Image (tube, rainbow, N blue to C red; front, top):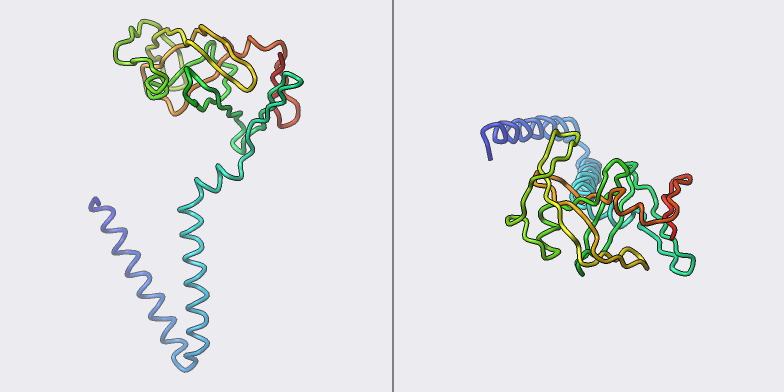
Length: 193
């Protein structure tokens, strides 16, 4: 912990002591009622702490996921609460989460996802360039043996590995153009072949 963290902790302890001291002094004649109120506030505090700590798990459980309608050759992707479309595909047999990015020219893998898919990011030649919101980054071209997305399997797919930092792999237009139809209807992205 840094000195700022210790200062914040001391401040919070002093604030809790002051509020608690006032609470006890104000309610010293009504001990039963004071105990009930303290228990209620304690449970509220624990509930807030639990919700904050579990928010990532709750968000991923409640968030809608892609729907595959194999008979009709469609994949329906619901819009996430943050406004993006997230999909999952198998790249060289490994599950990779993607954000759909129609502004990206090609499929772009993070270095971590590329390594999990059997590529060797440290041995690639990063001679390409991509302009991103964070500036220009070096990229390395690769061929993916297999990409499975819903009921569709595509072989020898061109992709790029991002040489910079990236939170998530991008499913860009290089791959999305394999679909005959791309629609955004309401809050759904519909990909059809």
